[in-house]
Image (cartoon, rainbow, N blue to C red; front, side):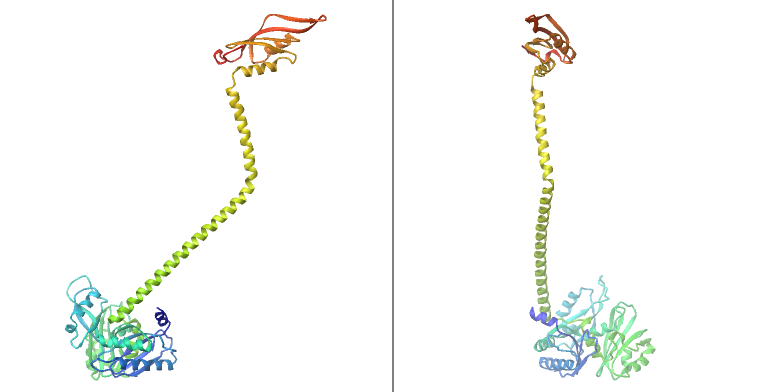
Length: 458
């Protein structure tokens, strides 16, 4: 993982390997820095690692001398020209990309007659109809696994990481641009003694040909009939001569290869667009490396997600306790302000309890108790009861006092009794010729009380 992080900080290099030379450039740089080195790979591809290592070292030194900076830990995107990679159009059924690769891999010799030994294959399916039907043209490529593994081994020895590898045709297609256009387009790349010709119709690569560069008439004829626009990358003068030869077929040569950033060398174009090429070859070791990185990235994402969950949980718990503390502090502040109200409420409750107790006592007290209380309050202060008889709503009472008339008049004036009558005569006690005590007996009925509600009393 540490190695991956180191490589992630390095430069991104695009390298194009042709029949006799290799070109490298720094991808994503504002400066157009290129380095070139002669190449002498063995034709049988049996032991290319040593030569590729030498070439990579020379390219790195020249890029550093040109001001690219240290190339240690660089990520490289490698593009191969024929004969190191073979690219052609093959009629294949409308299958998914991985299924097409499996079909090609099972019988590589059938589609790539010159292939020797195990091959890595790749396909570009843009623009194909996947809804069934007959075979459709597919841009396919193949290269010897021994060469691809040698390139990866050489990159590892120099301290680089091989990120992608594929044919130069995929980089040229990316450089041509306008992949969504339905117009016919042509690509001519002349490297050494060979001209590589591609015709693109809409999004489909319709033809891939390889003709001698010495016969420019054959090169122009390889485009077939236009009309369309064509990009030409090659030696000086080839562009104008091809423009004259192809104009009769309806082709117009673009004066400047704007899609390639102004470069006219096909190897420089392939190197510049190596990181965005459309067609790729993936050997098993590169596939394993990518799978390992995906797993490591997934582990890092899981660890990051777990850390975020723990941090979120911690923040939630901290926030919860903080809210609880704030609520507790607010409750304490409120308690100080409402304590007098609570005490007043308690006092009011006590008063209510006393009132309720008196009401209960009054409700459960016999009816004659309030009658006696009223009598005691009605009689003059010097009069008092000596006897009381009650039956139903009728009451007879005997009393003694200094003035019997006032007592009888007070009972009649009160609303407690009705039909107040004197029973018998008033008995007087004399002392020294003066009346000291008058004893009298009075009968009356309770006002507004049914007879059965009072009971008896004696």
